[in-house]
Image (cartoon, rainbow, N blue to C red; front, side, top):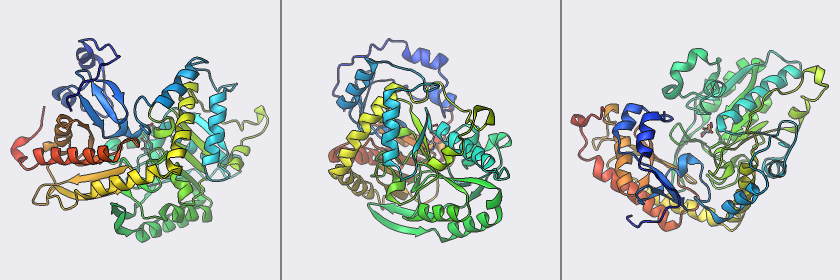
Length: 464
Ligand SMILES: *Cc1c(COP(=O)(O)O)cnc(C)c1O
């Protein structure tokens, strides 16, 4: 902390004033946001972010779970600049360009066999919407128009657009929009607790039995099931036992229901491999990718579909089989160029074991929080961890205390950027941190907990 870097960006004095006056921030109670000390990020380097005063922070949430190789990675920067010398944007509507075509081929190569068609968009919710709509239309084209239903898992988060909200089950974020959502069924999530590479508790039987019953009843009317494999990120890093997504895939296949895997969070090294489905031996019908796809540099998303599904859309223009969906910036060349460079780099880091070693190190560091009087539960897999906070007497904090937010604000003073999920700390580092930086990240989080929670009581309501 404290070492200053010279910044290339020219930060005027009125950033904070303009922000306060004009920016409506995502997922923010604006009154609370205005009451907090402003943080203006002016630069980044590797796993660090640098504010307008030159203070350095570990990027403990990988710039909202997107960053893979760090900020200003020389290879990614070079790929971006080189594409910029060719063209910044050109559409995929009606023609193509090198980076999108090449990236589509590379993604098909990474995916389980048969997922050969790549539909580009620019955000994760969009990637899920595309899979939902393709599944819906497919069943009509296949002469089974009654298959319109959607199944999701309880607690799932697939993004904030209406289709993604409907398939998801995030009452806290989306409950009020239910009347505008389409009806979907949700089956219970399994239980699994793992950290430091050890499964401490796990039970999938009840969840799979409920799904089996649901499919037995609804499959003939159901188009697809959407699942975040291995880990539900935004639900608070809720883990599934190994083999769970495979069991779900088998049930879907048995009942002729499309399986949509949402690897928006889990893909691109977050849990170790490029894709979790490949590792788990699952072949979905659709695969949704976003967040780490363009390494946290630019918005890019993709929906991979099985070749037979794509082929069912073929016909004359007049046949009406066309998939009428598209986004203006789908498959932006700059983003695709970065994604290609990122994938090359990621494959090398997986192949030489570097990523696995770092994930194991992160697990060991997180495990050191086990038994802390203010830690109710830990969950960690790969480069994703949740630290559930509690009072020393074991009870939960009253929501108005904003315990999680306070710990994150204190962490900022220790040079660490974190974002809480209510009273869970979510630790999601970029994959480029060294072993000592990973240790430092967990240590700074612990210091923030120790500074904040012992003295926090009901007299400290946080109500700006
Ligand atoms: C973040 C996320 C999304 C939504 O992605 P956006 O790019 O924010 O729309 C969808 N699914 C999962 C699993 C996510 O983590």
